[in-house]
Length: 222
Image (cartoon, rainbow, N blue to C red):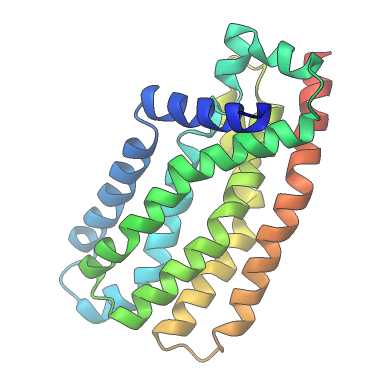
């Protein structure tokens, strides 16, 4: 097994074992979406109109749950120092860790989204478009959160700072993700326009995020 594959498998196992990982994110996702109909009342038209926004906001908050542990466990047991001193490029290592986070946090949310969409009275085409927006947009949430996790890794209460750093940066992803999903439900804007911007945000964050996170880790560990 190559070093990057070993890191990927190790982080996925740790994410599942420590704190529930994927299960915690999905349970939080389901809880938030389930509580919304009780708060808004039995108005199916309203639920269908704001359903994509509810699902995207729940996915954003669920993705933040495990971000503080992205580098914290490695920092606590000293393996982060070994990673920094290793021969593998740090940018590739943090990219592998981000991929492991998305596979254990973002991917389960995508799988659960069609079932949860039924609670918001979304039809099959709307659910399909919503899944596409989550596939295109959740990697951006992960790679943006990667930078925040690297900045807050040495702080004792880094979780609060992590949320302050990451949430404002994820606003464009949230805006275009909801816009694309609303366009598929029946909005006036074509689906392709916000969906293309959403894909561009994910590509840009996946290209810039590992380099920014690696630079932050080197600066924090000096």
